[in-house]
Image 1 (tube, each protein chain N blue to C red):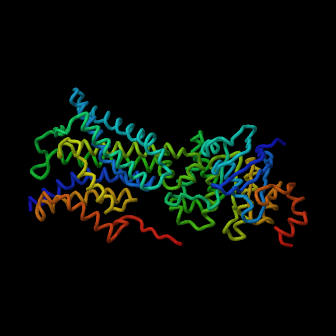
Image 2: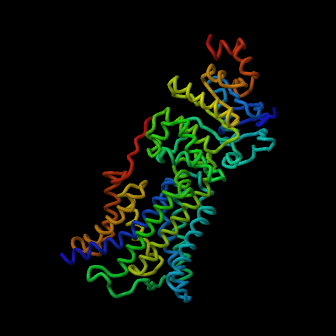
Image 3: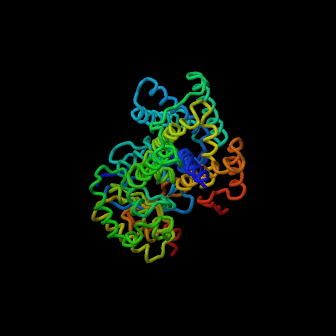
Length: 237
Length: 289
């Protein structure tokens, strides 16, 4: 399989604080890849760097094309949907307006109505809340909304920052099931950052381990799960 | 009673103009969290542009439309060229830029057109259509204000571009993540605000006459209106505009006299800031620390 996303020697800094020190990895087309690592290892920053939401150096290619000098909104227009840390809800807009904004960069206006119905099929709760101000949704509903908003782009690649954050275990299971279905049925590639390493390895095909701004381990999810260090440090048994 | 009713209706007419300008202030405040002190002078400059067109023989309504377009472009250009470079500057620096803009527009207008007071035509016939209570221009100004408000509402509520502008003002980071060009949305917001200001200028000019300082008082009333309504609430600004217009007129006619009318605006501004800083319809901000 070809690499959809190629990252070579990526550096990033917030002001003078350098966070990424040359991250390199590839993401295969159609795969779900997860980035594991402790708090502060640079997982969120890696996702933000891919979308140029922080200052970066190094090379990022998407489908063979350099994207590391483009503006965030142009990267999104290539079909990269980012579910950001903290969900990024437009709290004063309605649920449906949030979803419609997800499709803002799309050129085919006709498919948008259909996709709304498709998403309401995945998340019936959002349909019940369609006219409600998004800020009044519960944390779990807002997380579903964030994922749904990303899906409205009809992305080729989704970047998911802690999709399980603040969700009840049952809802996490449901959400990951939907992500798996979207990956398989719609061939959306995914890069998932997770604290919950066990769940992430369950979902993913490939995994990379980040420590202090560098990739220190890579392999298939199954291999990583068996790695003694990972097991002790991140899976806790 | 008749005199009172007359004052109330006249107040509604000027109130509509304050409401428009207050709305322009709120639009820019929502996306930048700053009050554009030059909003009035931008409106005044656009009104002079209209005056030039009408003097050159262009009929009123085409001149009106051209002026709205001119004001829109003026707003966009000001945002792109002057405001953009100070986007991330400290608040006081931006305020100084706003004040500079005010002074520059005022002086340039005086330099081009002189400070002599000029009359500005009304598109509405001089004979009163609504009996003795209201001049046709006052009724027309209210009508124009309402049309502008309805159009704006429809634009922001029902068009993808309007939705994108609201999203960009609320949450620029998330807006970028759905592919919205936030910088351009800001510029469009400035353009729209300037266009609304231009309309307000053309509606108020027949009443206060045309001179480079014509918007000074009007802008103060608009500030008061925006504050009374809550500086972050467009509906509040509109309601505030009408309230301030009526209050100013009624108090001026019956209580404090016309010379002290502007004091009403100043008292309102200080009163609201002291007693209820978020206005009557604004959100109260509670910050968790």
